[in-house]
Amino acid sequence: MTLEECYNKLHGDYQEAQGRLMSDKLINRFILRFPSDPSMDALREMVAAKENASAFRAVHTLKGVAANLAFTELFKNASNLTEQMRNLISEADPVLYAKVEESYKLVIDTLKEYAESQE
Image (cartoon, helix red, strand yellow):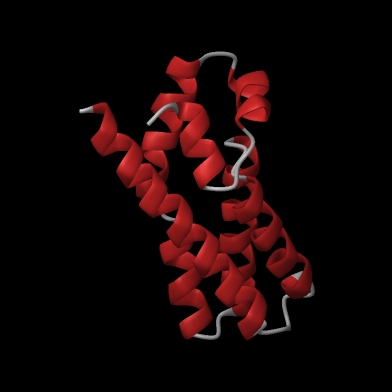
């Protein structure tokens, strides 16, 4: 699988990633580190604990990482949840949260497939 095919499969923007990171080597390095980013685990934990302010910070961080890596669908879904939770009082909307989970899983599964294809 090529990087471009990987980005297409995870609903990202390969050209945007190239413009931001300037080389496939850097893109490769950063996307393969993404699964170890703790933002999604923190979001899950804080949503379950109904710690709204901490959940907001976690989803806001996830949104930023997704934006920097041009994971477009994950970015959009995390952005929608971020805006919904911005007042730090609202619990995560279950529909928006489910969309973040779904797009996150797509990214993780695709990155695993991509990593295996590079071995």
